[in-house]
Length: 220
Length: 220
DNA sequence: TGTACATCAGTGAACGCGCGTTCACTGATGTAC
DNA sequence: TGTACATCAGTGAACGCGCGTTCACTGATGTAC
Image (spheres, rainbow over the protein chains, first blue to last red):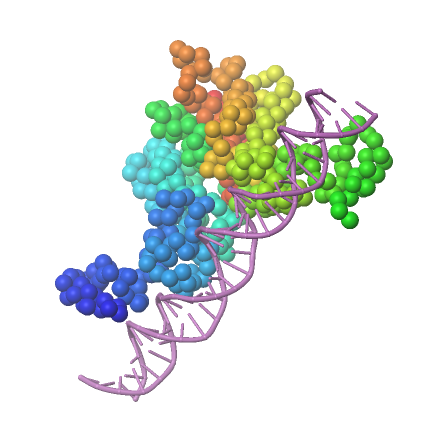
């Protein structure tokens, strides 16, 4: 039948939306049209279903309905795709943290706790993506977008703690190059450790009262 | 030359120690003599040099100077060897924790802090082994020895915190089946998170004063 | 509006890799007599 | 002390797997005129 251009036309005519063939039968086309995004989505689905260890560029290509060589045009190599996925993941984490913080009202304590809960929730509901974010060996650490996205997430996390009342380290330089204050690191550690241990099966993070009790240690 | 039994004999004669051929040229022998231990050691060296991701049963066999099929006799499959390594790792962690605790004197506070430092130190100096301990997907979770060793480590960690003064949850059952008190979980989380973040490059765990400042949050 | 052509985004076949596992085998060990 | 033999702990060759990457190619796109 040689490339179902017919189906393609039909589809275009039928929908005629501004959506612009987003649901067109990709497989039938030579040019995918949105392969970059499709590969990222495919990669995310692999992560969800199989975990970081089983991630594979070929499988991502397969899921996007495309040959094994195609991803190279968009990402160079496997690391490139994983890095792109990690960037999105950091963006999502940043969004989750700031949303939670803002929803928590004006009180510092409430804001910090809300962020802690959001952090754990994010890790819990996006396990493999959370794993990937920390597997530096798999990522292109030179990538500017990645560093930017990661720093944004860390910044969002530190903001609530470092801001109003806390024991602000009276350092000469407001943004010291090496070293946020221990209070931030402590908060990050406790929340990260809780999430990590839970993911690794040490305990159920949603045991009633548990996370609340743990977050009590954040109050300086 | 067909199996250097000569060398073997020479060696036996030469040393004649109670050590009993521990340094004999294994490669020259058909029967290794201590292959199980040699494979564990080889596996540990792979972990150190290459990290968990690159662990390989074949490589372990290679390093032990033995054919690829040999490990099967001792460990069944790759998971078996990794599990054996993890058991040893948990034992080492337990030892490090109890040693540190005992060396810290009688005060509860000092003991808890000493354990925290020991935990971080262990993770830092045995990165890949520490990784492996938490990669449940790679381990045989049914393995009795593994569960025993892991529980011993967790027990050692909780002992200092849960014991003397702390807010002991007045639960009806002294050893409740599901759920150590939040204070233990919090302590574990903070120390684990700190170690984990440091390993993953978030900050330098030995920044002067940093770990100390973080451990302040353990004091209830 | 039509045509030529450069550029882009895919194909698909092939390469080499290292892996885990299996299996018929064989050399060494140690036990029974 | 010597011999027969069962058992054990290795060998080495082979299998199939899925992977990442490369490369000459080709179909589609869009731009210049």
